[in-house]
Structure formats: structure tokens, C-alpha cells
Image (cartoon, rainbow, N blue to C red; front, side, top):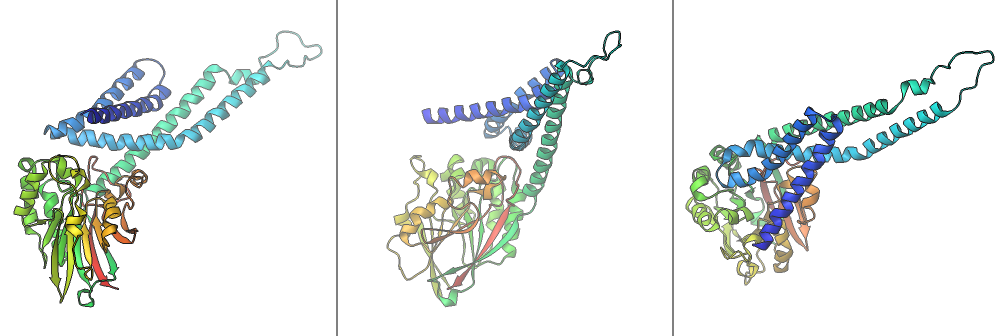
Length: 414
């Protein structure tokens, strides 16, 4: 309880500080004291409150908050990124303005040589006529407004592009992965892999239907859905998930839990997904006999199950222990970091999601601090790991630098 409160408090503090910074750069620095600045401050306060209201409201089924709240979250993020990048050039420009002002004051203070025979008061120095406190303040104001306009247009453009990408059809990623123990007869076995579908307040049944149709067009041998199917209960989203029953493959469709299933009623969703025809691998292993050979397909629960008291977390020994070491094994695990433990069991290939490929550049740099692989094919302690970008999105309906994706993994005999 205390840890949850500390987390909420930290998020609230961060959101408050970000909006305070945006208010300073976009409102205070670009306006003179008065009505406009007061209105801008009020707008900044409302937007700061909108973010936590969106998180709380969508969980309370106030789905009308999702679009404005999550769009502002994305726009806020890119405004912050652009303004932070502009800090150094803005600092250089402000220092240049200050040097010009100091130079102008020094010129104005220097005595003018008197002309012999001249009478009457001398004209004011030219520098004093064109420079002064008001002129310097106006130039700083103009500079701040230019930066704010640039940041606003850039953030709006990037966010708009990201919305179009996130709501568009998932792209197909085809990857060939050689496995040393794969029998030559099984060369070319294909696994259609999807993750992070994230049915919820912004993605519904039509989203599922589009993904199912895309997977079925691949005519794959196996289908693997590696977690984070939903952001809501079976009562809320059962109808949206129903098209999964139409998935087609030669040797079956399989599912493992992601962290978001644990936020959405994991036990009910395990039963519902199984009812829809996907076999849920909960720390289990099945034999896939195909093309005259045998491959072990294993699946582990997500790491979020540890200590929840709702369902067990990953049990690698149950899923991978006591197996025939001559057979290749493919592990379904939602988070790429599971490969650290899976490698101890000599897993040939792990299929994962969770990262969304970073979803919104440069957020992918932060993801890399937690996960060994953000997107695509990599290796962890000798185990090959393929991470798909995910077919949906979480939070903001925005993807920048990481298109929604369905992956066709083709296993090749080495």
C-alpha cells in the first residue's frame, strides 16, 4: 500500500513539475503580466489535472476522457522534448542579447568629443537612442515567442504523425532465425507472432478483427500471442476479444500472460482466452509434431505475477525442466528480460513483446534501461530473443519510430 502511494505521489510530482516548466516556457516567458498570462496559467493547471484524471477515469469506465487526456499526454511529452533540446541554443541567444545590451550601454556611457565652436546641447548617442531596457526586454520576449511557436508546431506535427501511424494497419515483419537443433525436415516452420494488442478504451472489436485477418493471411504453422491483450475486464472487453476465435493455423494458437492481464483480472482472462480457442501456456510446455520432426513450445507467466497473490509468476523449471535436450525449444515470454533466466535452461529462441519498440521516440532509450532488447532480433547469454513491436498501443494513441507490427518468424535449420 505504501509503495503504491509512493509511486502515485512520484508520478503526481513529475507531472506537476513538467507542467510548471511548460507554463514558464510557453506562458510566462511569452507574455507580459496581465489577463493573457492569467488565462495561460489556468489552462496549464487544467491540463496538469487532466493527466491523472484520465488515468483514474479510464479505470472507472469514463472512457470519454481517453482521447483528450492521452492526446495531451503525447503532446506534453513532445513539447517537453523539443523545449529541452532548445534550452542550449536559447541560452546562447540570451547571452548574445545580454552582451549586445552591455556593449550598447558602454557606448552610451562614453563621452562624445566636443566640437570646437559648437553650441547648444549635444544630440543623444545613437546607441542610447536604439537600445535600452524596454528594447532588450522586447527582444527577449520575441525570442521566447519564436521558441514557443517552433516547439508547438513541431510537437503538434510529430503527435499528428504518431496518431496516424498508431491507428493505421500493423506492418508485417518477416524474420528468419536459424536454430542449431531444428530438424532439417522442420526447416521453414512459421510462427505468426503478435503482442500488446491492448484492447481498451481506444481500441475495440474492429482492432481485433483487423489483426486476426492479417494473421490469417500469413497461413502460419503456429500463432503466438505473447501478452498484453487487454486493458479491462472480461465484462468490459469480452466482445472486443471475441474475433480471436477465428484465428487459423496448422498446429494451434497459443497465449501467455502479460503484465496488463494482471491489472485486468488475469484468472478470468485465462479462462476467456482458452474458451476462444487459444491454449494458454501457464508455465507449461507442449510438443509440436510437424513435418516429421518435434519442437518444444513453452510458455511462462509474466513477471508481474510474482508476489501478487492472484496467480503464479514465471516458473522456468516447470516449463523447461526435464525436457529432451536434443529438441529445439521456443519459449513464449511477454518481457524480453525473461531471457536472462531462460538462458539457463538452454532455450533456443524466446519470442517476446512488452516494449512496443519504445512506442514514442526517444522513449525507447528509457526502455533500454529495463529490457535487454527493445525491438527485433538479439541475443541474451546465448539465447536468441525476438521482440515484436506490438500490434496496438498503450496510453497515447501515438507511435513514433516504432510502427505497430505483426511478425512472421520463420525457423530455419542451421
